[in-house]
Amino acid sequence: MRAALRIALLGAALLGALPAQAGVLRVCDEPPEPSAAQQDLLLRFSAIVKDELERSGQPLALVARSGLDLARFGQRYSHAGISLKASGNTPWSVRQLYYACDEKRPRIYDQGLSGFLFGTDNLREGYISVLLLPAEAAAELERAALDDARAVQFLGPVYSANAYPYALKYQNCNQWVMELLAAAWSTPAPVQGREQAQQWLREAGYAPTRFEVGNPALMWAGSLVPWLHNDDHPADDLAQQRYQVSMPASIEGFVRQRLPQAQRIEFCHAERRVVVRRGWEAIADGCQPAAEDTVITLN
Image (tube, rainbow, N blue to C red; front, side, top):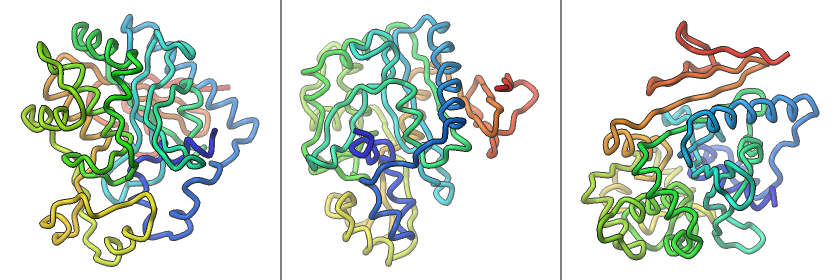
């Protein structure tokens, strides 16, 4: 299952792997195997995040975690999902889209929070972002996310890591989250299906993340990778060597604009230090704390 999950946990991070051909080809391989010490650290890090979720009093949170290095595009997070206290799997499991490599198709999967965090390439330093929603918005999203038939209704049949958000041919993991938000929040007449969800997102002002690739060779190389596609993107974007893709940053931007009362908590670990920050300003690279942050040392 870990191999099957790998592509979902990377999500659109494949864009960052394009210059390294080996990185592209190993997408469905097993992720790095953590040492016993790294497993202990990640489990304790996961427990800190879960304790914070429990204390929040909320039924769910939108969560995103770091994956491959996307710093060249200014992106820290690559993969998002919905952490649900009432999950039938285990409390605070993350409902997400993943690509089943063996089956060559996308699926909806519920994964424990610790497993969600284990799917990173960088076991020495990791980040997770948590969005806590106002009560009404959270309740609407919980109903949609826990309804299996509703969740699957917005699952596209073909996965593409760089899927264009306003086309139906492909879908990536973060786009499924966005379309489920549309399903949850399009009241009093909920949208039906992906086309209506995308129309609602347009009208609601959703702005996907822009990747200025700026290299025609990379645009061409993308057409050779099974999980990247160009044929759903606007011709003008391709001519400008640009992709517009749903990413955790664009999900957070949409939520912040639509729900100003939403709260953000960011967590990171490096060496044996955990930093917790409340607010919308990102933690500095290297998991460097500021004066107002909470710092926990894992002995």
